[in-house]
Length: 230
Image 1: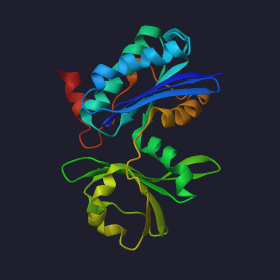
Image 2: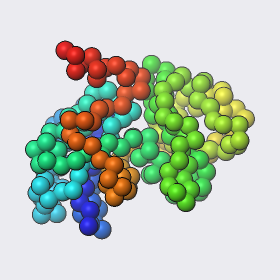
Image 3: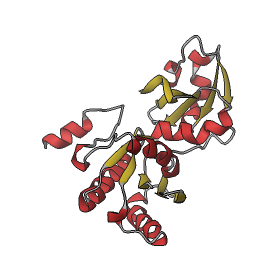
């Protein structure tokens, strides 16, 4: 029986979820710029509601990016602190992959083009499909201008989700690709979706020590290195 706590603060959403065997509980809130105040109390509340201590967990998963630089650092730092305090392994999870998990039922088998607004007229994006073996990246996650978002020529239709689709009219390279756009255009990376990925990674033993994890910024991969050098 797996017990995994998941955290995400990579967007305007602050999200915490707890897997306790077959039971999943979560707390999801859209509260920009309040993540530092909300995250730990949300964690404590979920653990208390399940009568668990931090030490009872098997691992802690967190949204490692891409997304808001500040938000990614918050989730990474809190996950590291909790992991070190309770001697627990960490499981970094892609925010774009988590969005694909959420969108999978609506995609009806289509490849999912997940996109987050990266500001500065850029998007974080990836093209993901699901088959018998699980999740497969058709295009690895990256950051680019909307006009450079493209898919392999063999793919004629995709399912689009995420805040990055506000730039849909600028995605000129997709002009020959049929896009079925999620009507809400508001699928967020959620801690609950991250648990689906984290559970599988834990079973495979694909975990990290707390002092090994690093955020994934995409736009500026040297930011963390510079911090380490200070």
